[in-house]
Amino acid sequence: MWSPQLISKSIQYDDLTTGKIPALIIPEIISKENCAVISKKILNTSMNNGTSKFGTSLSSHIYEKPKYFFNAQTSNEFFKKLFLDYMSPLVIMRQKISKLFKKQISTAIENGMSYSDAVIRIHSSNDSVHLHRDNSNFEMNEYNVSHLENQLSAILYLQSPINGGELTIFQKMWNKKDEYMREPEFGYSSELVKNIFKTKILPIEGNMIIFNPKFYHQIESVVGTKSRITLGFFFGEISKNYLYSWA
Ligand SMILES: O=C(O)CCC(=O)C(=O)O
Image (cartoon, rainbow, N blue to C red):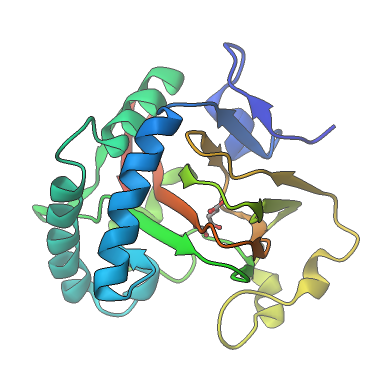
């Protein structure tokens, strides 16, 4: 059965990159109490500046490389300040990944400039994310990270919604020929995954998941007044023992 696996000694990096398993769940890497404190801080900041996304992402700077690195600097500073008062969830995520795969991990550097560390996303009632994939090696080849081998995605759930907001992963990897099914704005036609086996992951606060972003995936509609908050980044192999991450 193709279903998300809980962390265990037998899980290998390749199990995710080859698609043998859809995702890995590492439960409670930070406590629910810490999740609540961090989420409160994020929501307060979000209310003040009216944004539902914090942090610079490569996908919104595909053709603006200098601007991406400039914004990444500001956003990395912002995260340092945001997580100043307690053990940074970003640091904890990296430590877990490093221990799990026995590889070092740090944010990618290109020409002496740092990539963006991470992105926080807030999804409120009725928000959903359409079918998409996030492998960067097709349209982002101006950036060195797009050439990294075996790219994966790490997401930490900081706040669970009352209901909904599941991550659905379809057992189908992106292929260049799927581009004709691309929807003009964002993502792909749901026709692409009609009759394709799928699995769902509940966004449980404190849990980190690792999955292969080449698999088509979508976020189901959030139900209720509590928003769904995540912290995420991508990573790939710069060598067999070293991972570079970016957002
Ligand atoms: O938030 C999640 O569960 C998955 C994240 C996702 O789909 C994305 O970052 O593209």
